[in-house]
Length: 314
Image (tube, rainbow, N blue to C red; front, side):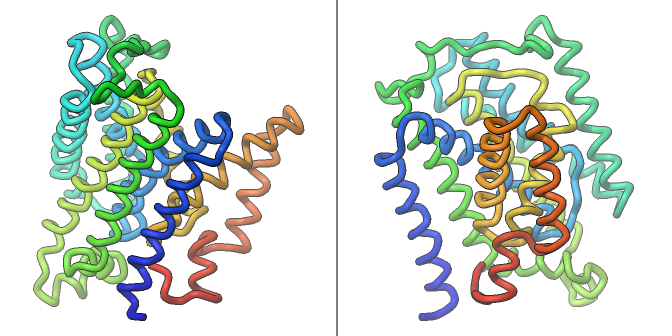
C-alpha cells in the first residue's frame, strides 16, 4: 500500500469510527465529543499555520471570534438561517485573516507573535466596547428556534454531533489533501528553511499569506459552528487564553500531523474533566501532566508515535 493510500485509509477509518461512536456513546459523552470535534477543527486551522508553516501566532482567538460573531450576530440580531449565517462567519474570518496577514507578515519571529497578539487584543477590546450588540463578557444566547437546518434541530444531541463531525471532516480532509499537494510541501519547506525555499524560486510571502488566510478561515469556521451548535457567543472566546489553547492542543497532539489536533484536544478535554471530578486542584494535575508530556514526548503524542513506530503517519 502506498503512502497516499495509507493516509486516505487512516483518515477515512478515523471518520468511520467517529460516525459509529455517534450512535454508541451516551448523551453526556456524545455532547463532549461534539464540542471536542469543533475545537479540534479550530486546532486544525492553527496547525496549518504553526505546525506546517512554522509561524507562531498568539492571536488566533480573533479568527475564532470573527467567525463566532459573524454567524452569531446574524442569527441573533438579523434572524438569519443557519447556512447563510455560517457563510457570513467564514467570510468575516477570511476577511480579518487577510488584513492581519498583510500587516503581520511584514514582521518575522517574535515580532510576528507580538503583532498577532496585539491584533487579537484589539478585537477582544472591540467586542467589549460594543457590548450593546455583542453582550460583552456576558455574551448572548442564540434562540433555539433559529438553530435548525433542513427541519433538523441542532439542539438535539445526535444532530448536533453529526453537524460537528461534518465540519471537522471537511477541515481534516482539506488539510490532509493540501499537505500532499505542491502548495503544502512548499509550506513545509518554509517551516524548515525559509531562505532556501525562496532561493529555489518559490514566492514565500504569497505562500505564507495564503497559509494565514486558510488557517484563519478554518478557525473562523470552528467559531461559527460553535456559536450555532451550542447557542452561545461571548467576548471570552476572543481573549488571549483562547489563543493559547490551540497552541497547547497542537503541541500535545503533535504539530505538523493531521490527526494530532484531535488527539490533543481530546486528551486535554478529558484530562481536565477527569481531574476536576477527583480534586479541586484539577488544574495543578492537568498542568503537571502537560509538563511531563512536553518533557518526555516533545513531538507530541502522534508525533512520538510517528517517530518511534509508524513513520508513515501523515
